[in-house]
Length: 403
View 1: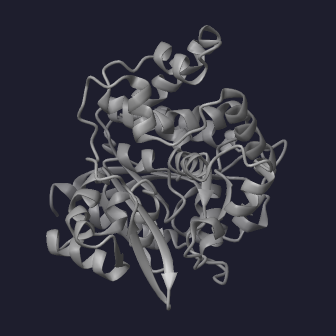
View 2: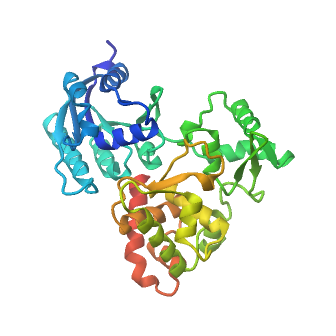
View 3: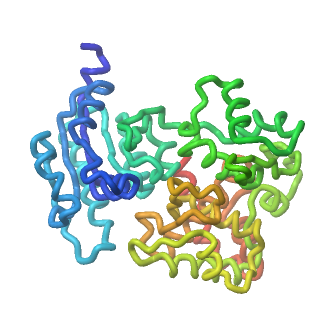
């Protein structure tokens, strides 16, 4: 047996997060998850799984039907007591405490497998890595926070077709824009197949999943500042939307306000912006509520105070930042017809806003030396910046954890 396979592995599963995602993605399959297949995959790639624990409300029939499989696989089932269905933080707390207890008690375990798609576990992952442990993430394809993938050493996607692994660090989307730019300089519109051909000519192993996307349509649709998608005669066409500017902001002499206006679409009026953010949260805060994007816009912004670009920017930042989960498996070519719901793990408006603004400033965090709580507050709340400095200090702290 190789050195790699001698590693000892701890498996900790946020079982509810995993099963809800899997069954939503594959509703016709009564039991889409195989714990045996997961353990075999982990032992083949990483080593012996010597510690196995799953956290869920086992009184719920949705999860209880997996009990025989878990017991046969030697997985200990930790019951999570709930006072209400929305009180999901109980499972999170149990998992964090169990992981740290495991680190202290079983120092010889070198690899931790965290089964979840929830970005709330980022602090745990950072702490495990700080103690010298390798962290492998596992989650349902299409429901995983990009920041979670970025911070794991490796990530395993659970898909209807089985398990698929790739390195935890997502590739930068700027590469896609740089590769496709010459193609669109010749003609501003191309088919999706032409774009894929150009990308694979540059990198024969190109996969949209390496950029945190389900497919190429999803990848290009996540960059509305550069690409728009439309169906014509049964074929998906891609149009170049960007001004012919670089994907990286190069002029350090530009003001912070000019930089943000060039790289992000957002509502500048704080009263309008806060009202729209609050309305979106209120419309979706009840567990299981989902709306298509066009319907959400009509309800959250009935007077059309946000422009098309600003609305697109709001939704992009929310999906990328883990505020909203967007269903991309419904065959909706136009983004406005895709269904969105509150991302599992967002349980209050404060968390919702924190994730939105962290996503809004994500690019600036790695590119601007003048980013500070004060500069963020002055930009977004010019009339009352002092009262918002503490909030943006928390926003930048969350970005520091991600990076």
